[in-house]
Image (cartoon, rainbow, N blue to C red; front, side, top):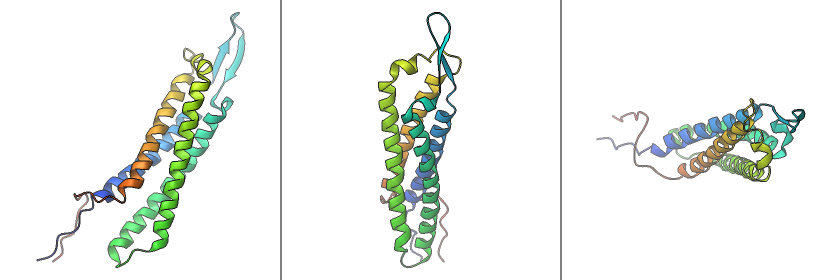
Length: 180
Protein backbone atom coordinates (compact mmCIF):
# COMPACT_ATOMS: atom_id res chain seq x y z
CA UNK A 1 0.00 0.00 0.00
CA UNK A 2 1.51 3.31 -1.06
CA UNK A 3 1.73 6.20 1.32
CA UNK A 4 -0.63 9.08 0.65
CA UNK A 5 0.90 12.15 -0.91
CA UNK A 6 1.39 15.05 1.48
CA UNK A 7 -1.16 17.88 1.19
CA UNK A 8 -0.19 20.56 -1.32
CA UNK A 9 -2.83 23.21 -0.57
CA UNK A 10 -0.29 25.88 0.34
CA UNK A 11 1.37 25.55 -3.07
CA UNK A 12 -1.89 26.25 -4.89
CA UNK A 13 -2.92 29.10 -2.59
CA UNK A 14 0.54 30.68 -2.84
CA UNK A 15 0.48 30.47 -6.62
CA UNK A 16 -3.02 31.97 -6.72
CA UNK A 17 -1.97 34.86 -4.43
CA UNK A 18 1.16 35.49 -6.51
CA UNK A 19 -0.94 35.69 -9.67
CA UNK A 20 -3.34 38.05 -7.87
CA UNK A 21 -0.41 40.22 -6.79
CA UNK A 22 0.83 40.40 -10.37
CA UNK A 23 -2.59 41.20 -11.80
CA UNK A 24 -3.55 43.75 -9.17
CA UNK A 25 -0.19 45.56 -9.28
CA UNK A 26 -0.34 45.78 -13.05
CA UNK A 27 -3.99 46.89 -13.01
CA UNK A 28 -3.26 49.58 -10.43
CA UNK A 29 -0.39 50.95 -12.51
CA UNK A 30 -2.47 50.95 -15.70
CA UNK A 31 -5.45 52.63 -14.04
CA UNK A 32 -3.25 55.34 -12.56
CA UNK A 33 -1.24 55.83 -15.76
CA UNK A 34 -4.42 56.26 -17.76
CA UNK A 35 -5.92 58.75 -15.32
CA UNK A 36 -7.61 61.17 -17.69
CA UNK A 37 -6.72 64.79 -18.00
CA UNK A 38 -8.76 67.00 -15.78
CA UNK A 39 -9.18 70.66 -16.60
CA UNK A 40 -9.91 72.92 -13.66
CA UNK A 41 -11.70 76.14 -14.58
CA UNK A 42 -11.60 79.49 -12.85
CA UNK A 43 -14.77 81.19 -11.67
CA UNK A 44 -14.97 83.17 -14.93
CA UNK A 45 -14.94 79.98 -17.04
CA UNK A 46 -11.36 80.13 -18.31
CA UNK A 47 -9.19 77.05 -18.05
CA UNK A 48 -6.86 77.51 -15.10
CA UNK A 49 -4.90 74.27 -15.29
CA UNK A 50 -4.94 70.77 -16.71
CA UNK A 51 -4.12 67.96 -14.31
CA UNK A 52 -2.82 64.45 -14.99
CA UNK A 53 -1.30 61.83 -12.73
CA UNK A 54 2.13 63.20 -13.67
CA UNK A 55 1.38 66.38 -11.72
CA UNK A 56 1.58 64.40 -8.48
CA UNK A 57 4.92 62.68 -7.74
CA UNK A 58 3.35 59.98 -5.49
CA UNK A 59 1.12 58.92 -8.40
CA UNK A 60 4.13 58.61 -10.71
CA UNK A 61 5.86 56.68 -7.93
CA UNK A 62 2.89 54.28 -7.75
CA UNK A 63 3.05 53.60 -11.48
CA UNK A 64 6.80 52.96 -11.42
CA UNK A 65 6.73 50.82 -8.27
CA UNK A 66 3.74 48.75 -9.31
CA UNK A 67 5.17 48.01 -12.75
CA UNK A 68 8.46 47.02 -11.15
CA UNK A 69 6.63 44.90 -8.57
CA UNK A 70 4.62 43.18 -11.31
CA UNK A 71 7.81 42.30 -13.19
CA UNK A 72 9.46 41.03 -10.01
CA UNK A 73 6.36 39.03 -9.12
CA UNK A 74 6.43 37.29 -12.49
CA UNK A 75 10.06 36.39 -11.82
CA UNK A 76 9.03 35.16 -8.36
CA UNK A 77 6.30 33.00 -9.89
CA UNK A 78 8.85 31.44 -12.25
CA UNK A 79 11.33 30.80 -9.40
CA UNK A 80 8.55 29.47 -7.18
CA UNK A 81 7.36 27.01 -9.82
CA UNK A 82 10.93 25.87 -10.46
CA UNK A 83 11.51 25.46 -6.74
CA UNK A 84 8.27 23.53 -6.21
CA UNK A 85 8.94 21.20 -9.17
CA UNK A 86 12.57 20.57 -8.19
CA UNK A 87 11.62 20.14 -4.56
CA UNK A 88 9.20 17.35 -5.43
CA UNK A 89 11.53 15.55 -7.87
CA UNK A 90 14.78 15.67 -5.89
CA UNK A 91 15.80 14.71 -2.39
CA UNK A 92 16.95 18.21 -1.37
CA UNK A 93 15.67 21.42 -2.92
CA UNK A 94 18.37 23.86 -4.07
CA UNK A 95 19.10 26.70 -1.66
CA UNK A 96 19.78 29.59 -4.05
CA UNK A 97 16.29 29.76 -5.62
CA UNK A 98 14.79 29.80 -2.13
CA UNK A 99 16.97 32.74 -1.15
CA UNK A 100 16.16 34.56 -4.39
CA UNK A 101 12.47 33.97 -3.75
CA UNK A 102 12.67 35.50 -0.27
CA UNK A 103 14.59 38.53 -1.56
CA UNK A 104 12.09 39.08 -4.38
CA UNK A 105 9.17 38.66 -1.97
CA UNK A 106 10.60 41.34 0.30
CA UNK A 107 11.33 43.67 -2.64
CA UNK A 108 7.78 43.29 -4.00
CA UNK A 109 6.28 44.01 -0.59
CA UNK A 110 8.49 47.08 -0.09
CA UNK A 111 7.54 48.47 -3.49
CA UNK A 112 3.82 47.84 -3.10
CA UNK A 113 3.49 48.99 0.50
CA UNK A 114 5.56 52.14 -0.02
CA UNK A 115 3.68 53.13 -3.16
CA UNK A 116 0.31 52.48 -1.50
CA UNK A 117 1.35 54.54 1.51
CA UNK A 118 2.55 57.36 -0.70
CA UNK A 119 -0.70 57.46 -2.64
CA UNK A 120 -2.88 57.36 0.48
CA UNK A 121 -0.84 60.24 1.91
CA UNK A 122 -1.05 62.17 -1.37
CA UNK A 123 -4.81 61.75 -1.59
CA UNK A 124 -5.05 63.17 1.91
CA UNK A 125 -2.61 66.01 1.23
CA UNK A 126 -3.93 66.93 -2.23
CA UNK A 127 -7.54 65.99 -1.50
CA UNK A 128 -9.05 69.35 -2.44
CA UNK A 129 -7.20 69.47 -5.76
CA UNK A 130 -8.15 65.89 -6.63
CA UNK A 131 -11.79 66.38 -5.61
CA UNK A 132 -11.93 69.46 -7.86
CA UNK A 133 -11.73 67.01 -10.74
CA UNK A 134 -14.52 64.79 -9.42
CA UNK A 135 -17.15 66.33 -11.69
CA UNK A 136 -14.92 66.58 -14.74
CA UNK A 137 -15.47 64.46 -17.81
CA UNK A 138 -12.13 62.67 -17.39
CA UNK A 139 -12.98 60.87 -14.13
CA UNK A 140 -9.53 61.63 -12.73
CA UNK A 141 -10.70 61.44 -9.11
CA UNK A 142 -12.37 58.05 -9.56
CA UNK A 143 -9.35 56.60 -11.33
CA UNK A 144 -7.03 57.78 -8.58
CA UNK A 145 -9.22 56.12 -5.94
CA UNK A 146 -9.53 52.91 -7.95
CA UNK A 147 -5.78 52.71 -8.49
CA UNK A 148 -5.21 53.38 -4.79
CA UNK A 149 -7.52 50.56 -3.68
CA UNK A 150 -6.33 48.08 -6.29
CA UNK A 151 -2.73 48.80 -5.27
CA UNK A 152 -3.64 48.18 -1.64
CA UNK A 153 -5.17 44.86 -2.68
CA UNK A 154 -1.91 43.96 -4.44
CA UNK A 155 -0.03 44.79 -1.24
CA UNK A 156 -2.21 42.46 0.82
CA UNK A 157 -1.95 39.67 -1.76
CA UNK A 158 1.86 39.97 -1.76
CA UNK A 159 2.00 39.75 2.01
CA UNK A 160 -0.32 36.76 2.13
CA UNK A 161 1.62 34.98 -0.64
CA UNK A 162 4.85 35.35 1.32
CA UNK A 163 3.22 33.89 4.43
CA UNK A 164 1.26 31.02 2.84
CA UNK A 165 4.29 29.53 1.13
CA UNK A 166 5.57 28.48 4.57
CA UNK A 167 2.25 27.37 6.06
CA UNK A 168 1.11 23.81 5.35
CA UNK A 169 -2.55 23.75 4.37
CA UNK A 170 -4.25 20.35 4.85
CA UNK A 171 -5.82 19.84 1.44
CA UNK A 172 -4.86 18.85 -2.09
CA UNK A 173 -5.79 20.98 -5.05
CA UNK A 174 -4.21 19.76 -8.23
CA UNK A 175 -4.13 16.11 -9.22
CA UNK A 176 -1.89 13.92 -7.15
CA UNK A 177 -0.51 10.90 -8.94
CA UNK A 178 -1.14 7.67 -7.06
CA UNK A 179 1.93 5.59 -6.28
CA UNK A 180 1.63 1.90 -7.12
